[in-house]
Length: 150
Image 1 (tube, one colour):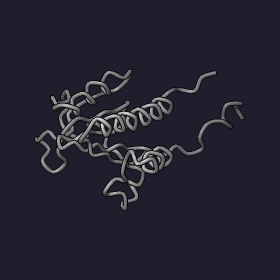
Image 2 (image 1 turned 45 degrees about the horizontal axis):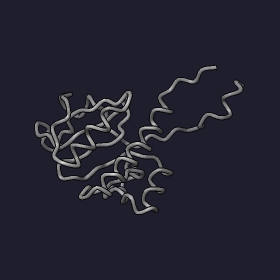
Image 3 (image 1 turned 90 degrees about the vertical axis):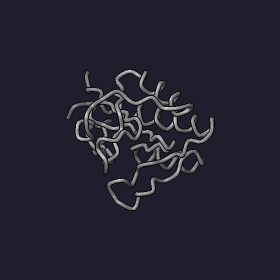
Image 4 (image 1 turned 90 degrees about the horizontal axis):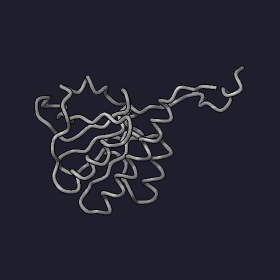
């Protein structure tokens, strides 16, 4: 057994997400107003982040916000109505919910969304909480995406 194998997760949980290419045409994220625009500008500057238009799932030609990915793994997305949905793991989700910085995703009863977390962005504190949540998930996904080398 390789020496590092004991330190690697035995099972990596990636919450249910759609591949970016399955969501519709890949286009730059739309311009979003105020705090939402500030979030989009910040997140899309992180190394390795792919940002794109988030399409309405029921009306695929209608833009509904901005998506953020690392490779095929969704970090999360922000809707025009100010709601952010982040595809986290159990530890991140529980931590942000217990601290009152996020809420459980409304469709969490569906096991495929069990660790999704949401924030309604209406003020600067919500904006900061959302940025921290996206950053925690970004760091989790960038670690998972790195190849193991010796």
